[in-house]
Image (cartoon, rainbow, N blue to C red; front, side, top):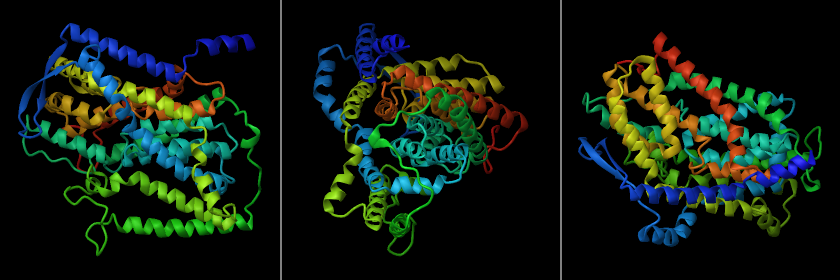
Length: 514
């Protein structure tokens, strides 16, 4: 057994090296495509004029002089501006003081006391799915918290990390309430409808019925896969002496006082924040972008004060509850304790930062070469020759969303390319634009968790590497998510066919067929 483990460790490719090899592959492929002058013309709706026009997609080589200059002059800037890195570092400050002060241990004890582990898994999976309305924040906040939730629950934190990432990625397009991402997609969808029929209006609750079903069923499937497949496979966690969690039967008076302080502080803070995201109230609504029409865009639009500062809003909440809990329990005695606790989660994070550096290089260079855009455009152009209808067309559009995610993970950019083809195709075959958008969005969420080019995939891999003492490979990280992906693929195909055949509305005054 030991001999087998040594052989396995030798052939297991470290995630850092995997990203280096993927980067090298992108550089070589871009050079080869450039030699053959790879390009393609596809049809796209002009966002300014609404006209259907031809667009040329070409590849930017990284093996010529300008490409080499780009690598050397932009790698550092791309790393510094890599959103997952900055968001993670800030959030870990708040998580650090909550953890070190004892707040997380206590609050997880209160929330999970006398509750079955399957119930805890289901509720947390449900939260991870619902948090998709905030965009990408779930990847940053919930993955570190999931590890601690399972650790303090005397379970393997690796199981929590896998379950959380699977839930957030697969739930990325499951929104009972319209998210800012879906709102952005609606703009492209509405433009594309003009090719067939002008003046089409898409409602904010267009997907609420089917998404409610997907949320509840999806959380149940994630719970089943976690408890029946992943947890037995991962096994028990080998705890170091400093990681040992002490058993306790009830809260002490100090802990109850700490929770009271933290609860009061959190309530006051949240009331202030909530008042400032309510539009048209006296001295309130200051965090909204009033240039937008829909409330979700006012809240999470690109120019919204709330959206741009959302990470800090959440981090400051974490700092408040951790600090007040520490003062209440006297686990924080002076300002030095505060400073040490704030940096607690950043201890030993060097390997994670290096891993994120190479991931950021891979993601940024892939984006620069336009390889994903070129291949997505090729698929868009090829769809013009397709003559499907009914269920085959539904499955086709779903798989177009899945396949193109591997090539170009950014959902909004891909839909900008493909909506001009897919929306008219679906409308010509009697389907609504809402259904076309939903199919593509769902396909994206199915593939998100197994796409290394997705920016937040590296956060998942980094925390696996942190808690797995034997190390983890990129392929192994993907294998952990595959069971979730397969059951969600089956779930979505079943839901889509049932909704189509029975004629159930997608949402309020929103249907599958025109």
